[in-house]
Length: 328
Image (cartoon, rainbow, N blue to C red; front, side, top):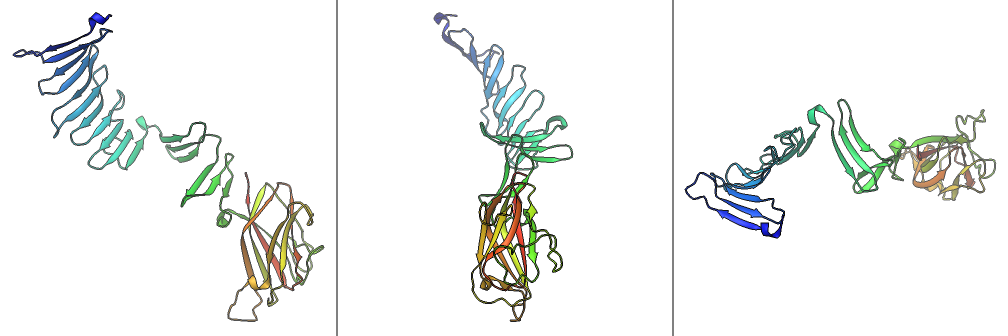
């Protein structure tokens, strides 16, 4: 191997059975040959065999082709638009079908059924994995009897619509709605209330869970199994025709302390309620839905609810608290 080995040798082979060729030799003395085959294909070859070839015919056959050392075609571009990548074990491992404009990968073959069709090799799982360096990886996998989609890393999976995340599945399997106003189907509900609540407010006016029958004390708190976020509240009343605009405040609190700590206050007045029988001015069933609430409480907290201010007779007074479980 020396500079003296460098050479370009042209052999026309006119009137010979051998193909015309050009021999390119560099310092390493490992020559490359450019041969003109009998069908006018240009074949680029080395000492170990053909590297690739280019055909002159644009209307049919392979225009461009690359083969491995054993002569098996690894890549081809056909005149009809077909592009194929092959391995020794899997012909057409990657195949673009020009007539259907579909791409097949794996064992999807030369006639993929979908725009992008991935099929497991030799009956194995078909899968697609998208990953960010040092970030979450998303796997889509077709198993024998189950379709799997999600993260295979220690990350949360979020589902998005209209450009925003809507639902999250955390890395231990908890499901939560991301929206603070539209996650009703995933939220949980606990109900507090008291019959004939009257004008009760402030200290001693806590509502009850389980039962709020006139003759039953009921349980005044609800113990949280996990961390939660309150998203919405519905107040329902019955027995009194609501009127006026006296300000009232509903307070959600924790651990029996309605004066400090985590407090969620919701302000309203009677005019905010919807009368259920709108054609009957004397109807006494009313409801008010408040969304966009954002109150966070910890696992083990005992949740309590009361009307904190506003001495207005509301009759029977029921409060539904809607919440999501965080990091379930």
